[in-house]
Length: 207
Image (cartoon, rainbow, N blue to C red; front, side, top):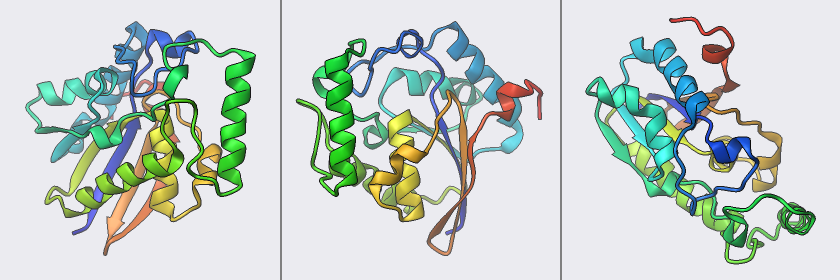
């Protein structure tokens, strides 16, 4: 079944602003700016008549799409689209040691070691497997226009899966708070037509 899917990242949290790692283990709420970003997105896209709203199991994702849910649109939550688990780095500000460990993990991914991970964290392969499970479920859903709110690294990984790229290509994707990735599904194939679009914030205009 053909679909149009609007993938967005959640709005800003105080930990985003403070450059503290959140991941899947820190369940923070939107700050005032994040709430404004969510409202701008709603104002711009509320006339799209979404058939279904999907978010992760984390609060910052749910709070971002809450205006649509309050309009009465059906909601489903999927832990499969939670942010990556960053292990012992979660809840901490970056240090030179943490940065070095992160860069070493990325280097390992680039060398095809997709099982590399931060201590007590999730590997690229594990994240991709759960995200692919979500995409497989998404394809089977009867709804034709769907809004999906997820997280930065998860969206980077989703883009590589949607485009059939190697997971090392994750590093090439930018993700702003409430940035939109617009995707068409036709005849079982995904086509990404917009990436990290923020016109709803930049223009702050209503569609």
